[in-house]
Length: 302
Image 1 (spheres, rainbow, N blue to C red):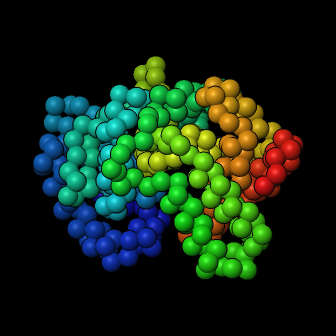
Image 2 (cartoon, rainbow, N blue to C red):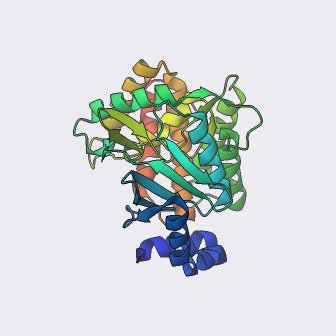
């Protein structure tokens, strides 16, 4: 099986020598998986940070094989899937924590929410998935929290006290103050998906199902932001985001002020991450201004 060059470069960039060893042993690992779980691995889906491929078991059952090289990310995703079992989350069939492999159900037809033409309809579907997924945060877990996101931004500011590329010092400081304030106000945290957007919600029969949770502990408003930042049109970005926000606020009974503040602060952090990764995303940068405009429209100072 030939792995896409972009995926290989991404793996080497993130995981360094671990990725080199993993890539060298890749064919043998796949053969071991096939023998152990009695399946045949097919050509992979479009790959980003993990190896994910359809597979067919010897009994004809169609499944998905997922291999996560980062042990921390694997354990977090595994725990999140287990805790959200039966709540609009893809089903976990088998797994091995030592080698970071999951066997998941194959969703059919597997159409992504991104393919829904009506943006408002898609947002309503996403809101129902969010409503079904969110549960009270577990005690005694290693899942990341929104405070970890705050620390991530703090680290970026410490390393770039005069601003970070296209983001001014003042904008960075504003975003950090918002993170600190909102995080301090959380009294009843939730277990969130952590990366819920149009490409992580798939059609399964007559239902829609979430995949690829990152797992995050925090307030519900934070989990909406990643959706707001994805699949944006080339024009009328502000109107699109505003309509999505109004749908989420109504359907999920969210705090609009808090959601807008989360949107601004996370847009800053997301843009910083793209700069750090060498994949600078100008669309994320533009959403910083969009959230500023929406905050001004609501007469919310920050």
